[in-house]
Length: 192
Image: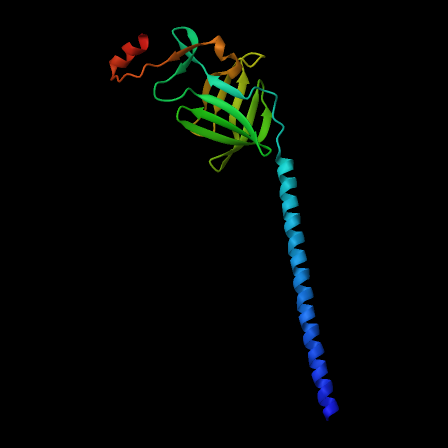
């Protein structure tokens, strides 16, 4: 009987050790599977990002808005806001176009570039919404000294004429005087 009891105790101890060993092995295997899955997910994200990378056209990256005033093309700086600008930047493989409107800015994360009849259309995400053709640039000359930028993502198309920032010295800069005016008084102020 003692021998049977001793055999039973030894069997239980070895089962317990085997059970603990099995748990440890299972835990390590599970951690390995999770680690490999996380690696695969990360690798998939990298591949996905690389496949989404857009080849950006070789165009200037900084533009300043131009204004027609008294038959001349000028750079007009409003008193209470900055002049409109378009800036193109690349961060972490993502191309971003900033459409700066005075004190407001619109950011387009470019996901597609397509050649148009005369320029390029850019599709992407603005404020969490995808737009197939959010912005478009159309050069008015081969040097991109003067271009039309169209922002078409919101309330219809807004087109403004811009110049490549390297040509800004070709245009007179007019700073709007900071004076209060009301109604017809403002028209008189703009004539000065």
